[in-house]
Structures are given as structure tokens and as C-alpha cells.
Length: 273
Image (cartoon, rainbow, N blue to C red; front, side, top):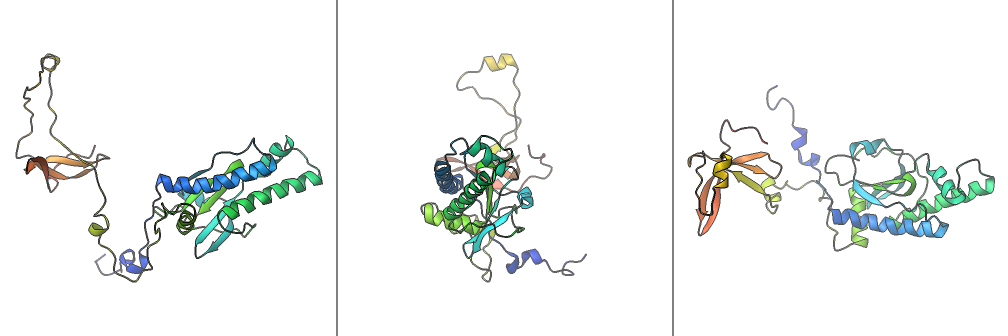
């Protein structure tokens, strides 16, 4: 297929989307907000046996398949909740010591306990909790989407999009808040070099290995010089922290400091390791 026979949609400005990744401190702040709501619920209903730790992690592809019910949506984003089939049994076990057949009064109390749980979570998220309607959050799990899932008590889960996480941080942890969603498309894209200019990367340059027999190794003393099979005109292989080959390099000096001059990756270089 010749170039130009099909438009490259992915390169158009309207196809651009922000890449969002939350730091551990930011995810921890969201978990802390919901921990407070969960602990208050457990205390109000005497459910000290439950109170599982709240965890907040980036959403993955499999999260799309959960039976999500919408909690709220708006300019701040969207939030969903999923209650597992065993949730009612877990409540019955915690409230009554069993999950067998319960009378109508016990069932009503269990329903009120469940509704209070949803209400408290909704309040913590600044939405009014309700059963809502089933939805299919198609963007959940997309790489660098900023969507997160939250694990609550008794297998309950939340799904929050990036805008909602950002809104929570601005209210509960303003020192961590940052603009998670880029301005609307319409302006020119930022060159990759400019966007990544402030990112620090760890690089490792390695000379060719040398081999010593055990006797030579035992005789080594401070100040000894080892000859390595690396020619001065041969480039070093520069790799990133994951061992991926980035480029070549040559030993150099800048002022009174050792330096490394980067060069094109040498042809025939070995596979990354």
C-alpha cells in the first residue's frame, strides 16, 4: 500500500489523548479517602470483622468485564461500583453470624446496611450513590488512561476515570493534585523531545568483559591495571535501566569530569540483555 493511499488517523490532532499515570502517593491519597468512608460504615454497623484494607491500582483490560453500576458522572468524570454476588452473604455473616435463610426483618436490615455502604462511598466520591444503570466503561484498562480500580470490603470494587481521580485529589490532597487531562484538541501537538525534556533517564555504558583465572584474581592489588579486550575506537553499548539498547557511546572528558559521548548504535550490535 503506497503512502498517502490511506490517511493516518492516529496522527491527527483530534485523535490525540493525554497519557496519565498516577504516582503511588496519589493512589494512596484516593485509597485514604475511601478508607475513612469504609471505616465509618463498619463502625456504624458493628462490622469490625470486615474492614478489609482499601487498595487503589491502575485499571487493566479485564476490568471492563465487571458488572459495573454507574455511581455518578459529570464534568468531574465518572465513577462506577460493582458488588459481587457474595456481598449479601458477607454482610449476613458479619451481622448475624451466618448466611442461611433470613427472616424479612433481617433481610431489610441487611439491605439498609448495603445501601448505607453505597451511600457513604458515594459521599466520599462526592456523588449520590444509587443503583444506577449498567454501563460499559469502554476506556477502562486502556494503557496510560489514568483510570483506576479500588478494592473495598467484601469484594466490592470501584472504577474511577482520570478526571474523577483528579477531582478527588484537588479536594482531599491539593498538594498532590495536578492537571490530569490535557486541554481540548485544537492546538498544535507538543514535540516528543520537548514533552520529555525534563524526564531523567538512567543509562548504563559497559566495556567488554575481561576474564581472569582464579590465581590472577587472588593476586590483584590496589593500583593494578587490567587490560580489557575493548578497543578505544570501538563504541560502548549504552542501555537503559531495563537493559534495552539505546545507542553507542565513547569515553570522553568534559572539563575535569569523565563523560560519555553518545553516538549512533553500532551496526551488528548484540541483542539487548
